[in-house]
View 1 (cartoon, rainbow, N blue to C red):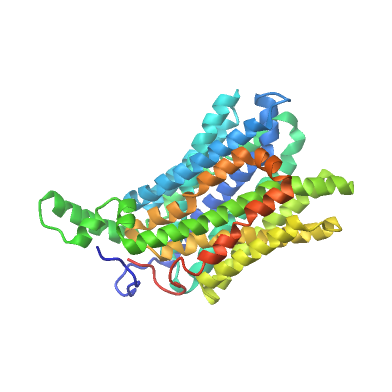
View 2: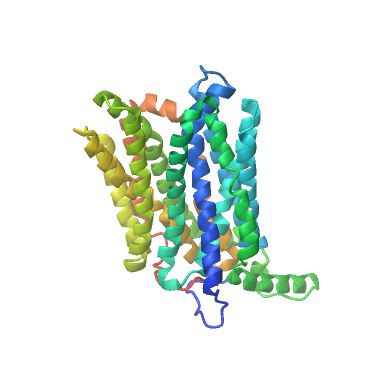
Length: 443
């Protein structure tokens, strides 16, 4: 089998118009933003949900199970969507994934007991995981080569905007009492309306259409018993098997999975424990719970800025060195945040903000770099495997977070120990693959 090691020229390849590019980007951005809203909404209302459906004395383990199961469903949905978008197209899977997570979230607002709530969160998690791949592929395949890093980073920033909107919505609804969580989840049904917009305004990726036409033509010849060349047999093969059958693509995928583990596990360690860590500092200073909310909000604002900055730097400096710099910043700021006893809440807020720039912002690479290393026929499978393949580790961490804190001697030690995985990113950032800045996507 022959790999695509050098991207081909763009001459003769289908190019999307600016209207199609704008519609694809807007739909993917809104879908990912609302995905972020739903992700953080469940974290904000978790205590209220457990108190209502399990009881006021419910063990924290109940909510840990919800988070872990949702993360697993997210990973499974994401992995499945990669294959689906390579076979059935980006647009169709984007619509169905948004419809699934929004309807499941809306129904969860009406859940009468914990079992039904958990089942609906599984469905929502599957849809949320499935949404990222088609949206990212649509944007990557429609954006100009020279500014693809900025375009995809702007898409990634939508997730952080969703966090901010969820925080604001919870502040408004918190006063409604024990039913606040139901109102929050009912808001999660709103994305279903986005499906109508996508159906009317968003066209399919032209790159995928061209590849799909070639694949269908080869499949017809195969059914007719005609002899096929090696590259033609590969074109109609199962995408993940095709990746692992090719030494170059297999090597790239495995190295990117190491980077994914460094990014996701490190981010999980920081983002999971920042609220508790900040809460302890705020309580010791005698400040109010509102201060905790504002400092955690600073983390998410930093993340949005970090994503946007990632895109600019990736298009100017290059993907690999930008990623290496972000890993260095994430490692350094995690040690500064959890390893230093800050003298005031003001300084703590500043460090939390800058930490968000790096620990959240560094994940901008996942939608940019992998898409530029694999051809259209397997691109969906490749990028979703990188993005979701290591989420099972994060799911185990969510389930065992309490035990990790106790076993490692406190929040600071636990965060410093697990957050040190960013050092692995420093090692692999420069050897995961070639520099792709400004190059066309491989066919």
